[in-house]
Length: 267
Image (tube, rainbow, N blue to C red):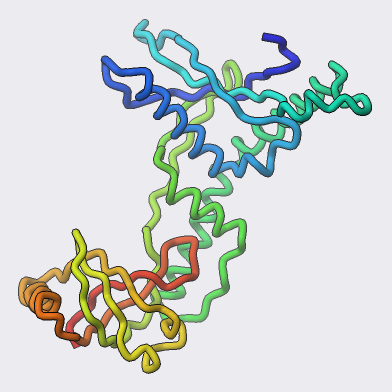
């Protein structure tokens, strides 16, 4: 392939494939890796002239066993190649554009562990403030974006090379799924059974804190830890009887919308 059209950026190991697998399984795993990396790096903002593509490479590991590696490459966007105005499509400009985008992407990969650490620290400080029921500042937009990418990433451990002899490894930090408001509140609710836990249909919303006035339902993912409380909730759900609960309310990490509840006790 013409080196001015495609340029290698990095290689990543594809893990978890069985001894015998079908082509669709390999394609699914490759697309999942590229999707996770695209979100973590915000690739759409980094690449000005190119788009991210991939191919496969067969190589042998230390023991001599063959393994499949995902080779990530940059290629020019078709609309740029078809732009015949000016000198944008000269070989020199095309090569320079590829190299600029590759440099930005490689630098972002090198800085990604630091960005993940900053986002995790900001979240820890916010959770600590909520635990102490202290005022906290809103997360910066970039921090929220990074936290959302960290939570939604299906691959937690990354292993590969940015270039020959330059290994690139990263393990994503473990994060809680929800961010809780410090002070438990009392709610009157009607329970709707879910496969796990309940959905709380909020009643008398005007008497609730202002953050819940526009919220109609909260998802309570976990059942009460004691048999007595679990039985009481099952009975209320079965009979359709409203029940008053003490719960913590919270939101999904990276979002300010109150959407979940955590059981504390029956009021």
